[in-house]
Every structure is written in C-alpha cells, then in structure tokens.
Image (cartoon, helix red, strand yellow):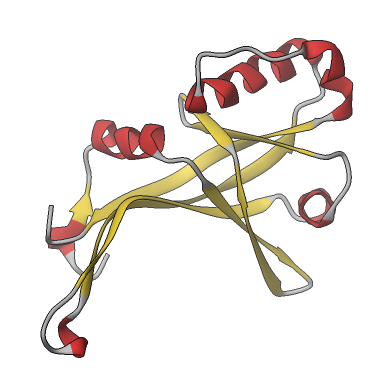
Length: 151
C-alpha cells in the first residue's frame, strides 16, 4: 500500500468494516476482460458467501475461472473544500483476492445462507427453495483494509 498511514492492519478492525457493509463487489475475469458485480453477502472465518440465481454471467465466469477480487466500503462521505482539487472522501474499505467455489452440500448451503442473512437481519427464510439458488463461497487468500485520513 502506497500510503501506509491509511492502512488498516488489525484483522478485527477489517472484520468490523466487513460486518458493517451492505454490499460486496466481486471482480472476475473472462477472456482477459474484467467484470464486476455488487452482491448481498455474508462473512465468517475468512470466507465470504453470496447467493445467486443458478444461471447468469457471474456464474458462467466463475465456472471457467474461480479467481476473484473483492471490494467492500463503508462510511462514505464527500469532503468538500473551497478548491475542487482539494476535495476528498471519507471511507473505510477492504479489498482482497480469493478463490470462489460453489457449495453443493445442502447442509453447508443452508449454513452459508444463514451467514448471509445474519449480515442484514436476524430474520429467517424459507429453506424449501434452497435448490433454486446457487451459493458461492470465497476462500479469502489475502485482504487489506484502508481508511481515509479523516478517521
């Protein structure tokens, strides 16, 4: 990281950012072309989880190339100045890389969906439709945190 004063090294602080976030952006590559998409997600013990319809572009890409990058940000706020070039942004963010895997085991899939739900609410959902959804698990290989100078 170029600006070391913005780096977050404490894993607990990084995990607090993840727990606070409402969107995970997953970046993938197909035929050397980037593709990025925001998803609802959950996090537990160095894994990210998200669900999807059984077909679609992100599913097709992950089947061919399971290397992914991800980005999460929270506490975004534009900081204005009298001079436009001096404007800034308040933020806390996490970026990382990992490998994406499809969860096939129904019990593991149910647990992953519970983790995703916990990110947003304590409510439950109907597991009767579990076969109509794909659940992806991302094994995090590396991640870093960063925050603006305003924090």
